[in-house]
Each structure stands twice: as C-alpha cells, then as structure tokens.
Image (cartoon, rainbow, N blue to C red; front, side, top):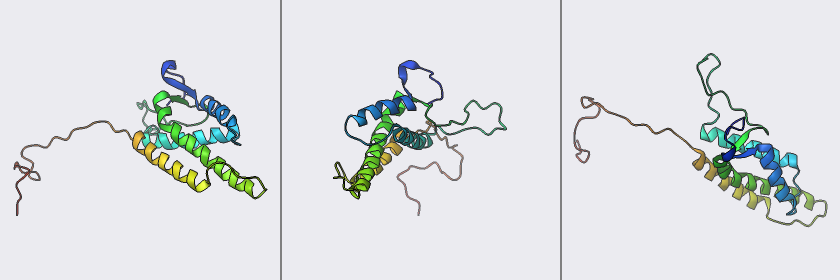
Length: 163
C-alpha cells in the first residue's frame, strides 16, 4: 500500500479505481449503493487493514532520519495485489451489510426486502474482519539468545522439574 504507483505490475490501482470496478459490479446485481458509499467502505476497511498490518507506523517529526512517514489512507491510496487479496472479502461483506440495512430501512416504505438480513450480513462482516486481522498481522522474525551464565535460566534439561 502506498500513495504512488511504485510497481505497476503488482498493484490493483488506487482505492478509487478499485471502488469504481466494484461499484460497476454491484450496480449490475441490483445493489442500491452509490459510488461514494463504496469508496467510503474501501477507505474504512483499508484503514483497519493498514492498522493491523503495521502500515500506519510512522516516525516522530523530530526524527529526520526516518524513512517511513505516516501513511494517509484516502481514495488516492494505491492498493497492492497482496493488500487487495486480504481486504476484498471484508469490503464485499461490508457492502452487503450496507445494502441489507438499506433494504430493511426501505421495508418501512413498502419495498419488499431482497437478499440477506442485516443481522446475517453483520455476522459475515464480523467474521471477514476477524480473518483479515489474522492475515494482516505482520511481524519481523527475531531470535532470542540467552547467555549460558544467566541465573534466571539455569543450564538444565527442560524436562527436569525443580521442587
């Protein structure tokens, strides 16, 4: 994820581009969402993904040697293919939730609801978010070395118990 198109072979495009594609697809299947709704869903869920993946980490302004500035997620943010594969199910589930809520609201106006209920859509969205949390989590590998003379960890066999 970035604010510029760094590697055109591995990007989906900007959030706005991807939202346009999804909007066109949803529009042909009977969804009542507006393009602005789809863009808003993209930004909300991409921010969640970026937060869990560590993309929003930034250096303090006082540190001039910092090479990782604050990432601002908006409709011009470029999504990589790897980012898109993780956030797409969440974005689709969120669009389903918004649509289900609209259908239930329109029911008061006499419209016959179609599709899933908002409670079903909410369960699917919550599950998609939980999966995204797990898939987005990234941590650099590390190792821990314990000196042989550390008194907190005596050099004994791990299967021996001390009473």
